[in-house]
Length: 341
Ligand code: NAD
Ligand code: ZN
Ligand code: ZN
Image (cartoon, rainbow, N blue to C red):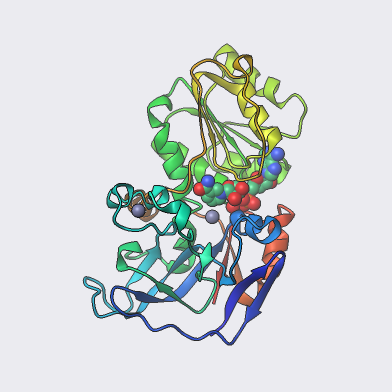
């Protein structure tokens, strides 16, 4: 079968000679409908954040059940499902609570399919346990694939701060890409705060306005922090969610977050931050959340089925993977790119 494989630093190739796996025990073989292209893939490809082995890329996956091991119950061939991405041990306390993204054994395991193990940029994908599937019912797997990360990760980050997102407060979203464009819609639907969005191009800022941002600021502007403070007034933003994670965006976040606010850094842009008592308002919680839980993914499916969130999608073939990664390097993708076998 065809697959998009990572061979090492800046070396991604589409191969055609992969063997179609056979599931046993609790394993499930999926016919892939779509595999989302995440910026984390670029960190792996260009910066080597997941070292070592050769594997099939694609950690945002959805498809139809093709074949099941003999222990799988409650599913049938053809069921449409998402693949929950952060594969934990399945038995520690966080895993039992469905928070496999914070599995006790994370330091000694590969992160999951497409992140060290074979992922979904292929015709078929082997999922190691039926525990990792979430049914999507009437949703189309081609367009639902990004729910597993581009929607789940911001949903989990937003829920963490939900008690602070009241109607009198401001929330700032930095980076209106795959994750950020869904974050804006989730904020619009589940919070009542005024939304301010930052990106570096006029197209992305106009897009942010369509998705629920009341104000947009170009974070390339030297006085971006002052422009944001003009909107919020002296109180500043109660919650800042940074989907870039560069030194400059983290610095912007520290300037615009309010006393007792949340500064949530989701982006893996390799930025640095040097703590100083006077550099951060008192009471700020700075966090670097990773992905979300299985139960949260079910909630995200609920948002999508109710049409409260919509993923803007660019569709491509597996053969176009390298072209798509180039578009992403240049910030050219509107919403999320999905590879369709
Ligand atoms: P993307 O490429 O789709 O979007 C990035 C967006 O940020 C683009 O719109 C780009 O124009 C914008 N941007 C770049 N520099 C900026 C700046 N200085 N100020 C404002 N905006 C800027 O990326 P994505 O797939 O949405 O991923 C975003 C980040 O989140 C990546 O670093 C990715 O690795 C990370 N990520 C983290 C998790 C997690 O669990 N922590 C999960 C998924 C992705
Ligand atoms: Zn991702
Ligand atoms: Zn675990």
